[in-house]
Length: 71
Image (cartoon, rainbow, N blue to C red; front, side, top):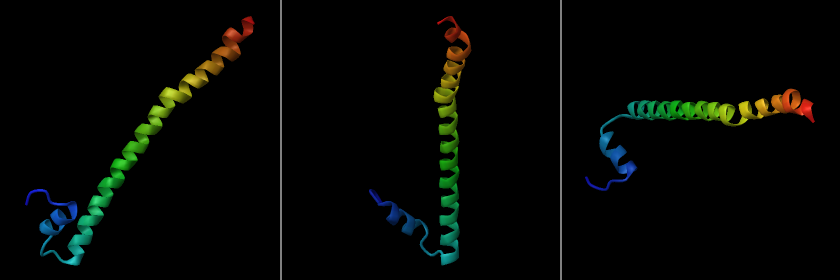
């Protein structure tokens, strides 16, 4: 059982299951992957706002209303 490929592990684990149960297991795994990807997308969006958008907006406001008035 050492050094099995993911397909071999899947076949050995699900041996004896009918098609319905295998499809349900695959659907569950797809939902887990989708949930992780959605969390990753959300975290990326938050990082973009905090690291790019907010500093850019702040710089534009400072240059437009603050330091820009002295030049």
